[in-house]
Length: 251
Length: 310
Ligand SMILES: Nc1ncnc2c1ncn2[C@@H]1O[C@H](COP(=O)(O)OP(=O)(O)O)[C@@H](O)[C@H]1O
Ligand SMILES: [Mg+2]
Picture 1 (cartoon, rainbow over the protein chains, first blue to last red):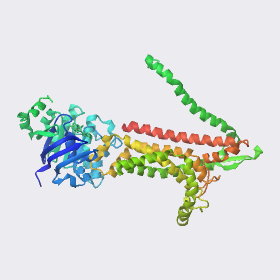
Picture 2: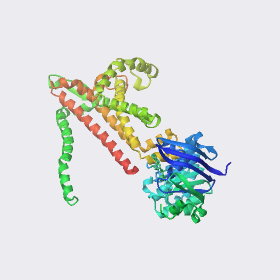
Picture 3: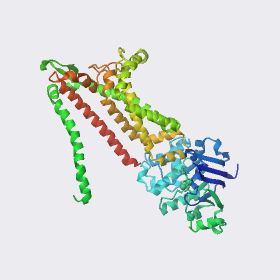
């Protein structure tokens, strides 16, 4: 088994004539957190979405290069199977509004056949909600609907839902962009703990968030990774001028 | 009025006639129908609702009317039609939105919209001339022969004009309308939920199932609207249901619906004292049924929006 959970080489993505990614090389070690930083429009979401082939749903997209995830070429395996192991949490909280808090978290466990009976299902749901520090807040209202939760709680519910699929890789696309500091803190705390169990790739446009959670960082700028490395090194001694500017908030 | 600014006040008073007009029109239609029906209700009382008879006579004392068969027939045919429409339109929606290549799906959608707008008399003629004899020979007879122990198949099919034929043609004519509603609703689901389920590795079928769950009250409301439409449909039913003042559960038997009764009796109804008022009584029953059904559907939709806040 490779030491890397993700190996991307020479990835080029074009969307209707526009070069979004222009030759990206990237490796992510198992059980680490990689944070991809970069200004808006630099291609972060697109890069993240090629990792579990959510890009399949974009019209007029053309993907070239190699993406190997968990030792397998993503373009040769069943995309649904891939997405069950490589789960993405998007920017806007999207718990299913017609399902209870419990059922939202239980759904992926059912889809993936993780629980064999009610008791096991309950255990999985509890485990996932505890991981995101939401259990104490919702344990007495698991039968309520998600609209009774705050935005930050809803996002943590989505994170719990992703975890209940028992993925090997977790992809996060600016998961804290729309939520308050205390919920952001809880999510960051959860991610640091979760690293023990899975590999995490997070996208953010906020450098200080990367400082708090990353093991490794990569800076994406205009479809190219201009700098990457262990978080400390990059933050202390950015080698690239663009990185320097980005960290100072100049771009 | 303290809640309005000056310009809002002007707007308010200028739309007032429209609001009052619509309310007034709804009430007028209802009251007019009730008023016209009154002589029949007074004369026949509850017999109008529990007997099935159409006996006009020159001597008003000999006239006898009862609307039970056409009223129940209306509900029965519409219910059967809705039971056929629902799976058909869900399957069509799934095919068009998720399975077929976009171009073919789009083309099919246009065809469906066109079919939804066709004059129903076209469906009615096809049902009467082509479908009725075909159904009798190749569907009803075998069903009666092998499954005759089931009450709805227990009677011998004779002409082919029957509840079953009418319901099927109603279903064919109404499915495009309900399908168009469902596709519209499905496309209204915010993309974040679609992404949410696909992110979990759901197959297209699993995703559709979940998203349709999200849409459930909308689906029910659409079915009720389809039901309402079938309830009021006249031409198709008059041409295919066999127009008989008798109701049985067996779907191979002919019966009447209120609209088919009105269509077939209106011309001569003016000759008798209570015939026309009785037709109005039928219209009134239909109006009440349709209003109640629409009201329930709309209430459900509101309750769902409140809970789900899509
Ligand atoms: N579905 C799409 N259709 C058209 N253009 C797209 C699509 N997705 C991304 N792009 C383009 O790709 C570029 C990068 O987008 P994205 O990956 O969302 O960047 P980021 O997440 O860093 O803000 C943008 O210029 C955007 O306009
Ligand atoms: Mg983005």
